[in-house]
Image (cartoon, rainbow over all chains, first blue to last red; front, side, top):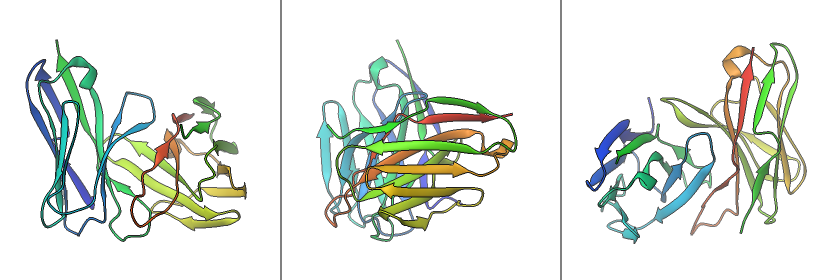
Length: 111
Length: 114
């Protein structure tokens, strides 16, 4: 089983709609990292969260880390076709510098 | 900008062939990583290196080896490619810091083994 579980696995939304992607661990997260991947390409870093309760925003994307540091959510407001891609959460579960990743969430935004 | 370059974007190899995947980073990072990405499984760590000539197994090292002779270069080797090694391979690097372990990724190498 995955140490980091993402939900949903895939998502299709109409342009302009809001959406949320979740990332859950049974262990404390020593840093939670959100990445985006366009199909067939490498991962682009979006945001990093380290403190319980932390929230960060960039343009229309907001990420939060819960107080217990075991779950994070990524929220996109007023989605656009440019938001389409695969979103992956990564975490350092053992404070070793090695990141493990969730399965990814594939997002499609219909114009 | 930090740049991680993977020399081959697409490769097609035959079963039993030896395959080299090369990765070069230009920011003097200590750590380098090789992941493979498969649908429904996300990224899985194959090997990583925290210094020249140093390596450590990740979660799925079987069938792979690595080489790090220079700080900027980290190679993944498939000694005898098999069809179940058909995948997207991603190289990444970072400077381990207790404050932030942001990985910078290359564009990926898509390997097909026939």
